[in-house]
Each structure stands twice: as C-alpha cells, then as structure tokens.
Length: 472
Image 1 (cartoon, rainbow, N blue to C red):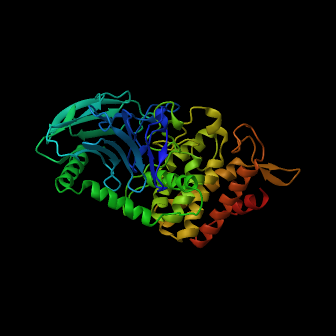
Image 2 (image 1 turned 30 degrees about the vertical axis):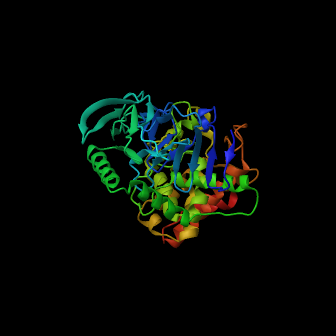
C-alpha cells in the first residue's frame, strides 16, 4: 500500500488495507461509522445490561462501494482528507472519471451523506455506468427496528434499544431516514458530468429526523450541503492547527491525531448539544466486544480533554457537562460500595453507573474520581468560568468527590496520617495496592481544589477536607 502526496492533512493511497479496522473513520459529535462498514453508531445510545453495555449497532446506508468496470487503464486512489473530514474514492481512466465521497456532516450532526460524480474526459458519447454495491439490511442486534412509511421518497426505520443499562434505565428510540441507493448510476451519452447525492438522517425523535432530513435535502437542492460541511471544518481548523518543520510522517501524525480529536467534539456554537462523552475507540467503534464497548473513562478526562481545552474551551465544557449529568449514577456507585459522596465509574456509558465488564477495575481503579476533578480544575484555570460551578452542577461534583475521598481514607495511628488502601493504580498489572502514588496525589489535589474553590465561592468548607488533605 503506497502512500502518495505531500500534504500532511491528506492521506492518499492506491490500495486499501486488508485489515478493515484500519479503514478511515467518519464521525461528528453525534454519528460515527467506518468507511465500508455495515453499521453506524449514535453518541450516547447503548444497549445491554451492566457488564455487557455497548454502543447499539444501527445498519449503515452509507456502506456503499463504487465499482467501475470496462476500463483497461483504470487507476484508483483512496483518500482521507482531514481538512474537510471527507473520504474520497477516485476511479479514473483515459475516457472518464468517477468520484465517490462520504462524510459525516460537521455542523448538521444528524446527517451522513455521500455522493457519486461521473465525468467524461474524452469526446465519446456512449453512456457510462458506475455500479454501487451495498449490503444494507434493515436489521440490528441491538434495536427492535420497525419499517415506517416512506418519507418524501426516502425510506424510514425506527426502533428502541432492547436492554437498558440498569433496571428502569433509558432505552432510547432511534429514527433513521435515508434516500434509497440504486444498483448503479449512468451518465447519459449526451451529458459531460453528473452528480448523484444520497442522504441519511438519524435522530432520537421522529420530528427531529424529519426536520433534519428536509434541511439536508434543501441544501442538496441548492448545491450547498457539502459546501456547508467544508465550511464547518474550515472554521474548526482555523482555531486548531499545529504545523511543524520536519519529516512528512511527523506532520501526518499530528494532523491525524487532531482530526480524530476534532471529529469527536460538538460543532462550534452548539453549547446546548447533549454530548455523551468521548470513548478512546471513537464513535465509529464500540460494538459488543470492541474498543471498550464505546465506554468513557479516564482517557477522556486525562489524555484527550486537555488538548481540546486549550483550543476549544466550549467543547471541553461539553465533556464536563457529561460528567455532571452522570452524578446521580456516581452517587449510587459510592453508596453501593459503602462510601459517601460520589464514585464515578471506571467505565461509563448512559447512566453513570459502573459498566466495566470486569468488576475489579470498577472497584479499585478509583483514581477516576481525581481525574474528573483534575479536568474541572484545568477548565477553571483556563477559563475562570464560575457559572459552570455555581449554576450548572460543577460544584456538586467537586463536593461529592471530596466527600468520597474523606470516607475512603483510613487513619494510620502509627504514622499519624491517612492512607488509601486496596486500589488499582494506572499500572493495571497490579491490584489491591496501598497508597498508590498517583491515586493519593490526585485525591489530595481533588481536596485542595475543593477547598480553594469552595472558599472562592463562599461555601462552607468542612474542616475534615483540610485535615485529610494535609495528612494524606
């Protein structure tokens, strides 16, 4: 597989990898899929009880492969343009070319789209046919899918997830409308070029899916759907770019990493978007048994989040709001373990309850609490935004985690200080560790930030927090 081109943001090859897991991913904050994969995922939509909770698989109408036959001198390239969040398959011969583009719309996050453009480059007048191969089946192992009536000539499918995360937990209904895909498209002999555009809309209500589908079709009609997508990506890159002098692979690595980060965050100006966090495997992955099942854990707060915070504090705040919304589940986790306050789950999904398939990680890898507070502290240091803490629940999280640490420590009378015992540190090869350096350090920092912030907000700060912070 040869990689061509000198633009570090554009990855082009003449052959696709044999391992389908290495194919490009196309995501926005709400929808995600992998090129040529038969499923897509919706952010925050999970199926399965605790221990088996995973992203719910929805059949993907954009899983379409373009096939051009009959040309002896056909040349093909496959490209991921990270500047525009677009996958581009080009098939070209001496007489004509065909271009297949796929993208998850950057600002209209309920939309996935693809187009096929056929153009002739020779004076011939015979029709040119391009085959479109799809294996779409209106089935899902995770949703009770039903066919609804066609909507404006498009197909309609809807269904509710089968198994809630916990008893009485959410079972969202997903609605999908998509334009049917023919087996082939043909450029007539009297035309030089033609484009066919196909649209998929996904939402969690019938009203939203119909509205966003109509909006997308209107933009297709005016020739501006893809343009609006590119403009949104351009605006995103304008505020987040790292250029370096050095070998091309180094620059490619940076652009590739930034692409996956930017693909995961909400669109600019969408502060009220109900964001459901970032899993390390991304939104395109996370089916049962794959890439942590789409769960959110410390990778988000400790490794992914700081990079986003520096460039886009608004998007970083959306990550924090996800944690704030899961506080009730964290409070229950702590109660079930016999402690006060809140214990955020090592692996989190829809409810804030612990969903890690292996119990020991959820029980012992409690440094996740400190990771959540560290993210909140970094946000405060960068933005000085008190509203998140005073009015939007940030202080509730800080306070509940401080209470947890105070109930989790044990007093050592010989050393006259507090210990945290029986934990798993970031080094997951060891468990039941007493006084993990990392765990104790983030616990102490959590308490210090709670004391400092509480004083600034003129809240009553318990003396217990100060005592334990000093002697931990």
